[in-house]
Every structure is written in C-alpha cells, then in structure tokens.
Length: 373
Image: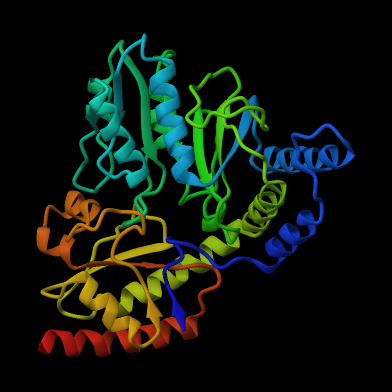
C-alpha cells in the first residue's frame, strides 16, 4: 500500500497508542470525588500542563473536544451566541473547512451577516479588502491557517496585528493542518482548533484553545466536566494520548519539514513533465500538500484508478460535501475544469522516496490509460 492521504488522517503512532492503553487502566471518572476519580483528574491535569508547555501557551484554557469539527463549532457558535448583543457580523474566507462554513451558514438563519475576504492572484487573502470589511459590529474573524486542499498558508500574523485595533472582535484560527507540521504561535489568537488524528494520534479527541478572559456559550450541556464550556465525562486516556501525540509531532519539526519539502519538490518535478497535469499548489503552500489537476479526467475517476494499485490519495477534504468540484481549487484558479479534475496528494515524514518512485510510475500508467480513453 502507498498511503498519500495524510491530510485526511494519519496512522496512529505506537507510542501514542501505548499511552492510551496505559491510561485506560485508570478506571475512575475524573468527575468523581473518590481516589480513582482523583487519579484520573491528576492525569488530565498533567496532560494539560504538558500541552500548555509544548505550545508555549500563556493565559490560555484548553477545552477538550471530540476533534476539530466540534472545536470549530464551539468557537464560532460560542462566540456568536455569547456576544450577539455587540453585533452579528462575522468575517471569514471561502477557503474554510466545512465545519466552519456550514456553521456560518447556520448562523445566517439566525440573522448573522457573514462577509468573505477577497483573494489575490497568488491565492492569498487580500488584507486591504479585509480591513475594509471590519466594522464596529464585527464580533468574530475565523480563518484557517492552512487550507486543507491546496496547502495555502494564510497570513494569520498580519490579521492578528490588524485586529489589535478592534478589541471587541475575536480571532479564531483552525490550525488542524498546521500544528505538528510547521511552527505556530498561538498567543496572539483568541481561539485555536486542533485535532489529534492529524498528528498520528487517535480519532475522537481534539481541543479548542481559548483566551482565559473570553467567554463562550456552550453547545453541549449536561453538567460538570474539565471546563464550564463542554459537558461530558472526560476521557482521560484520549487526553493523555493527545499530549503524547503533540509531543512526538513537535520533535524534529524543522528536519521533518525539510524532508517533506524535498519529497514535494521531487514529486512536483516529475509530475509537471506530463503535458496535461497542472500543479495547483504554489510557493505559498506548505509542502505537506500537493494539489494537481489532470485535464479531461474527473478527479474521482483518477482517484479510483490509483486505488486499483493500492495507492490512496483524495479528491477534496474528507469532510467536504459531495460536490463535483473543489471549491478551493476553483477560487484559486478560476478554472472549473481544473476544479473538477483536482486531486490532493498529502505527504508526511513517514513517506519514503521509494514510495514516491512507485507512485510516480503508477500515476503515469493511470494517466496514459485514462487520457487514451
């Protein structure tokens, strides 16, 4: 098998799984007051301290969630419902994950106004247009750090600096595709979403990291937990495994990045030799994602052709609606045919040069066969 869909999910690191299994031997409910409950809570506290140190968090609170989708929903809905008396204007982009865009679509039905930042020819956000969108009643800006289909890196530092002049407006960043891959600074951002299964952790655990002085309206109610903002029995084994996954993903970060960059350049150099293959990802994209289009071949057709050789890529982000084209690619290229024929190849430090050589060989076979048809 050649797995090149790491942006959808990653294999579980054996050390992470071992941490989960060991933590599972603690049978107490962290909400219980007896010794077993205290043991579970102590493990959660230790894991939270470790995450705080790893991400250099200052004046932050960690809310454990089931993943980034819940974290995004809690951040957006929590701010909108809590601060709607200040205003009902939210700013975002057309590049967002469906857990963001669908939540914003729902808020429209509640009377919220959503504005979208224009993009430049290079795919990046038009910051001058962003400035023009800001108003006194803007309560939230929500922008992903890394677009999950193209790999475009958004200018969150610049946005954060602009928002310093708008103290009543909060800034949420979906960092699902960046934490564990590139260096990040969370301290000038009000809310950050992340998920363990993108960094070789287990599915079912993620986090929303928020400023301590910021309040949210909960979207899951039900009583005591690790925080006032998310009810439910805390899953201490998953929380411990998240801390381990984060620690491991941050080790050798620079070396891992450079290794993936070399793989990306090698793959790109080989694929761009093919006449009707277009490289959609550009120099503003992180190397972990390479998006390409194959002229006159539907994305799903090409994906399944590769699958016959036990090669796995994706056409879009795994959680996106079942549309016939990639909206992110269309926004970036203004070319519907390229948007309909785009596939996402996502790389990892686990990817080998030998795998890429085999993938290129199989890619060319599928390319030749489908182009003839």
